[in-house]
Length: 115
Image (cartoon, rainbow, N blue to C red; front, top):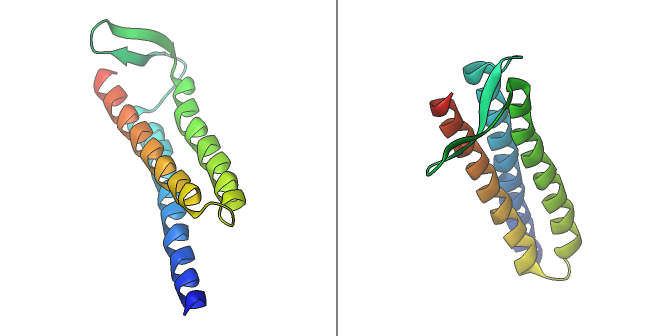
């Protein structure tokens, strides 16, 4: 019974990791097809109180999904290390990564509204 529960649990976790990667790909494709970054200047950081804080080349928008991919890779390796020692922390890394990917996707959506 424990082996069957462990297999189902791993498939669930693999689904969540795949979902994180799908959100990262959606973020990248949204930048590529909807914002269409080029050499012209774009707003890279927007603050509600001050307004646009950072301007830069449109190609710098690709750093957002790049950072998300780096966080996903780091948390995946951390989860693989912790899964035998601390199950809760291993599961927590998945949910933190999913939250980060969603925040990055929403940040790109809001940057589209500003640009």
